[in-house]
Image (cartoon, rainbow, N blue to C red; front, top):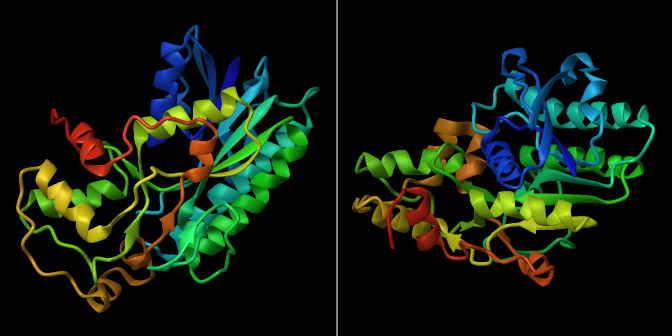
Length: 304
């Protein structure tokens, strides 16, 4: 197997490349930053710029499988400019890949793409599986629906296509967890609104392994990439405090205040999706971190 990765310098991409190194898999990766285009015997970088419709077709030489992760961060302020970048980085990047793959002589054996559980509606009561009804209630849903439409169009360029709808990724290096962690570290940790919002999460190591499970076994279709035990936000903050040996004593911050401070982006804190992992469990995936306390102890470097 020779693997092509987009978004390789991000949180998940770095873990996937680390596993490739352990498995002696040759990797090509695409980057919009020319200074990151390193070359070694097993790792080679190639330039692309979805905004300008530019891609180095040499990235496909000898490649038979593709992991597509690229997309701008949703954690920065949702200005009109940033919202446009969040959408276009996903839609245009996927479209550019499809057009470039059209020019190649043979199809990919397998393509696995990142998507997000933000595609599901906001609910404290419903449990979402891969067949759940989708709506367009908010910006995240609109982005993810448009993103998945482009991703599914890649089916003509591969023998097998799968999409992984990713939950809250637990990793020390960044992501939404770091924003929840900082107040706790500063002895000001608390939940938001009722604190009953469901947090469907996954440890970054399990997520990277899941991508390889999907690519190795040529999965077909859409899968929720979440751990099997979602928790309430209140419980998550409590366990973060326990893992960091910090008390969580402050009252919850009201929803209206978060909306005033964060605006539309407050959906990242106030949103609730209880997402099922049953389908990936039925495919034989085994979690190293199925429970939140164990996962957070690993993230923060604390021993059991």
